[in-house]
Length: 291
Image (cartoon, rainbow, N blue to C red; front, top):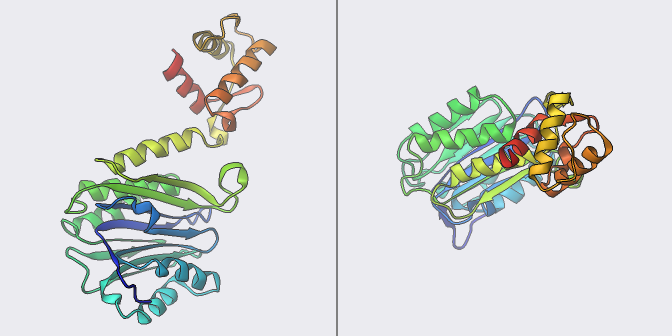
């Protein structure tokens, strides 16, 4: 598994499994262009891998193959390291679909370099300011509630605040896989967001993740009744959006329904459309934009 010209990625990352729903994912930041195209690997129902330092992409593809064939994360990692003549330059994180996690940091990775393995996750970094970065990532991941993608990105932000990559920032990414979790249930890439070149890539990644949440399907707790007051507010929004034929009556009549559906489609909110109900996330977005 030796690479001819290994890329050296000064990077910190986290790979994790969500025991509640089986999601698997990786988040990463690096002083390197488009790190999301190199470090994270994941397959729904199989596992998630981050390969960095003197990067060897074979750890991603081969690791997922081994996990798919029933190997545990520690078994797969130990096997790949044993077959790699340049393992002392690698840094790799693996978590499998059962939540078993493993990590490896080669002795020749540039300081500070190291990792932490916890329940259902592993985080690591190299060329860091100090160990504080990975400790902050681990602590934040363990104590943050919510969807896996949000926990992963929160861990990145905490790592950066604790010092991060001692060369600085450039790119960041988050990848979360879920069976049929992608757009229109046609892919397994539930979240796949990348910031390829930015002075504050983690902050930009957080902004993109908030947009991803906005454009995602409603959760049951997001739905509210269409009261007369809300109907009046929606009709005001529609008029401000250019639908001047809409009358402010407080009734969710056919004209209001069609105009609101058209506005949802224009704003890419179709996954939050519900008959005779209103999604509060979509409503808050429309308030900010049109009121």
